[in-house]
Length: 555
Image (cartoon, rainbow, N blue to C red; front, side):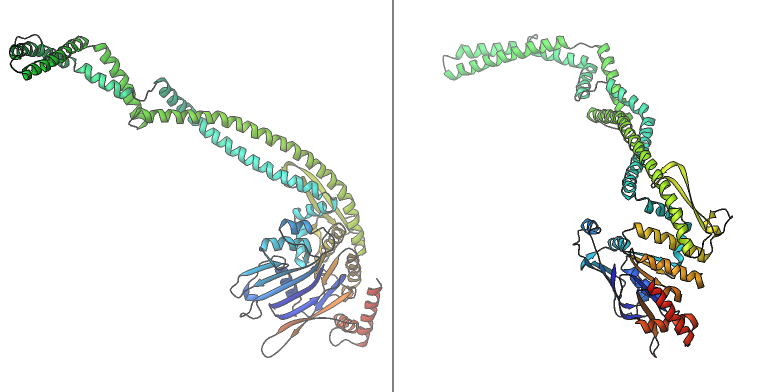
């Protein structure tokens, strides 16, 4: 529960501290005194955003602190989730500097605004007079039914699975889209791959073929040069070999005169042997050179294939063509594997859908049971609140498709008078009726909720007299389950409080400020009397105030 609220430098508030009771806390004050300012400040430590234009002093930072008493272990998991130390006496603090920068703290540990908001949602529920609009929201109506169905864990698991289901669906759509695009290109890529595959490409083939073709195209010139070379070595009288033999003979004739002549003759004999070998090779090579038009045509055709493929794929080598062939092979394999992945994901999606359908059926059954009990309880509280003939009807219909909440559509119907068929609450309920319907719903939820504090901001709009007394009794009963703070302008409700706080405005020459004080019994009598008859209250008003207060405390 909220034990203490400290506000510094916010709106008309310079510095205010407010210690709250564990039961029903009443806040009253004159119009414009700043009652709603208290809620505005409180909302800051519940994660709402702030604007520096609302600062009391534009040269100082704004600080809002809320001291909470946390009993039991229900909030421990929340602290552990955010790596915070759990303390029974916990402090939430918000600081907004003059440049608009905001800092949030939980037990002096810095946290993000979203974390603070998460904590705030588990600590306090603020219901303003405008919140009755929620009654028209199907999401709120469903949340009410779920809150009373006691299937929070089942709903949480369902929602997690639904997120996974939607994620699978999205991934499946993407895969199928990609697969369709790939299949549109598949035939063409398969053709390209087959063309390259059938070409039986080899890395060095082109260079080898180009050299061979060049040789075949120049066969006659090559053959002529080889023949001429052979003849110059061997067949002519003036050819190299006969002349070399004659030179050897000349040197042999004189080698006895000088050893050097013999050495030269020996060297010429070695050269003769080498030239004979060269001559024989020339003869053999010349015999091998044959003009082969068929082979020329064959090579030319093969090279045409290679050149055409390179031009088609805009590359300059067989190595690059082979790389393209491998890429196409990979793409075609991915298409096949993509189909397998799609099928696997489809199976997983269908399996989780089956589980969702089962969970949705259980949720629907739980809600159906909850609706019967909820209708009876709301009608009972409405009777207490001065609407004996009112009837609430919660209409449950099944949707065709799964949603994040299951397959139920909930509609809240209302009838204020006997014999009047229930109709959508937004169309038939007045402002005062909406307030009491919301009060009834909040009253029921309070019994099923772990929420420690509930705040009503003028929920009594549109009611007065005996109805106000009855509404006050309903609000007073809430304190049995939780701490309640009620901002009211009705004396009948103000008299029900365990503690009564009065918001006032200090007028000065410089500027107005807002303050708050806790009233003792006589202070309450006087303020309630003013609420009954205006200023200054007469004796009868004071007597009525004491009577209201006495009856309120007895209840």
